Length: 178
Ligand code: SF4
Ligand code: SF4
Image 1: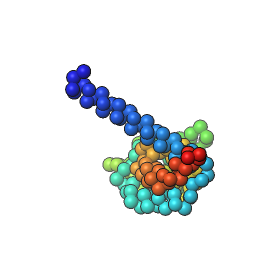
Image 2 (image 1 turned 45 degrees about the horizontal axis):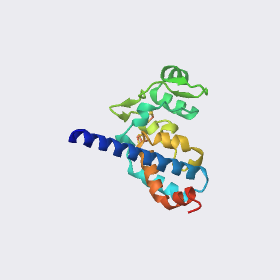
Image 3 (image 1 turned 90 degrees about the vertical axis):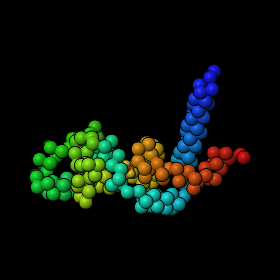
Image 4 (image 1 turned 120 degrees about the vertical axis):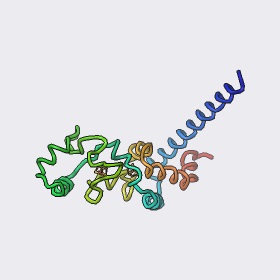
């Protein structure tokens, strides 16, 4: 094998083992979260700190990848702002999902303009709450939390910081006989 080929091969092995070790780390953290052993106060402190640091106005990934659900208040507020009836707003801008919830019709969201929300001050509750970590019981939302971490900087940073913060607890939980 030439030197270059060998280097590439070694890089591949390193990447593979790195991915494997992150997978293992995430799996152990997930088991820990599901066990209800999590100190919610410490976890929420991390969520608050990360949420304060990250400016969603520079991201908008969720506006491009998700169809946020709208509640009655959202529909009333946004249709009033657009000066259309609620019925017209619903028929022009929304669809229903399989659970019969009304959500924004298109991806990226129709209100996203030059990577910014053009309705930021009156945006739907679901947009404000995403990635649904602040003040929420994460043990009930493990799967969504890990999925969101793949595209949302808030969820990703909360995940990585929480793994570091709870390192000893996660280790003790996953290795009870050591
Ligand atoms: S309404 Fe605004 S915040 Fe919500 S998805 Fe659309 S662009 Fe994003
Ligand atoms: S994906 Fe996350 S960080 Fe990006 S705009 Fe949405 S909530 Fe904010």
